[in-house]
Amino acid sequence: MGDFAFGRADDTAQFESWFHSLPGRKHLIIGNHDDEAVISLPWLSTEYMAEIQDGEHSLVLCHYPMITWNGARRGALQLFGHVHDQWAGSRNSINVGVDQWDFRPIQIEEMAKRAARMPVNKHWADVEHGNELP
Image (cartoon, rainbow, N blue to C red):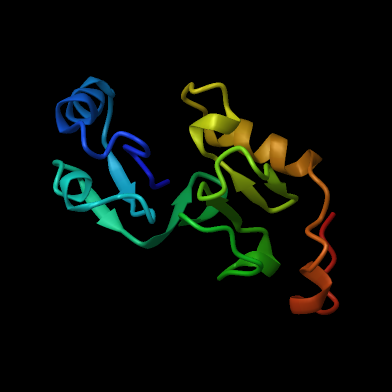
């Protein structure tokens, strides 16, 4: 979710090693600390924002936390990372940065369960009038 080599951008051998050691298909949602060396790694895709469907979950991916997004009223979960360990997120917008998850891989079901236990964002009613979150 961005900032792939945060704090190590000058050590290309190190972050290239990290990249190649990660299993699976790799997609980058570009963060504010992702420079050209990171963006030019052989990602399957690089985007500033993406909307995807994964099984029953509609997901909106952006490096930055947002107050509302496409599908927010219909249960779409927004995934972000920019704030690192400063904010875990809210009921329907969850920080999926590795520093929130003990630097381990996580499944979407685990993200959704954590989000469901979070408080509603205090600004939700300001932008989504009449749309209560369960």
